Length: 222
Image (tube, rainbow, N blue to C red; front, side, top):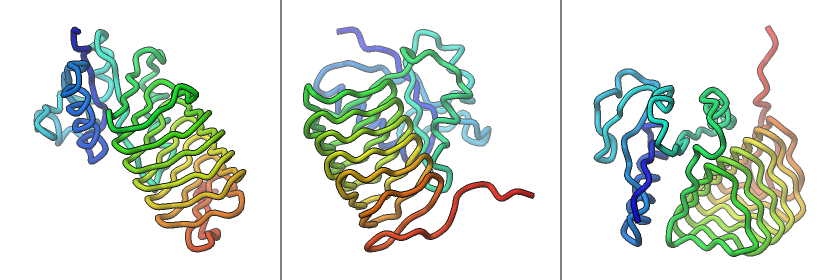
């Protein structure tokens, strides 16, 4: 099998984790050739991250038309950041790589959109639907009939009960638990270890046991 060229966009921790995922895939079968990392911080250009060189800014994806791309940025302070990057790059969906660690469990009944990244020991049980550019950290469990919108991020060890809906750009902190049939709105953030028993409105931060509203993430009008 000829390895496919791959570029990672973002030079932070998510990118380093994804490099290790790619190496695990390649140990099973030589699927990917990482050409480099792209990042919009000029101070990083020419440096190495995880043994891979930072080649230039994110827009350099357009100079490597043969390469597939993984958007490796995530921040609970800006939960829609990855989708904003994807919108700015304006690539066709088929330019994005879907990366699944060999130790993840993805059944035939699950669907994954372009650009998803699933790390080791993530488990999708049955009829789970992931949109595009969903980031799933290790030990996440998504159960039957969960619907996950574009650009959602799951911290390590998060758990969804059945029939949960996460709208685009939601951020689920490490170890958070979400009750069945709950909806989490666009760009909402669930804190680490939160126990979510009721639906969460868009652009709000909820945390605690049981989770409660802490603040809004909506921009404040001048």
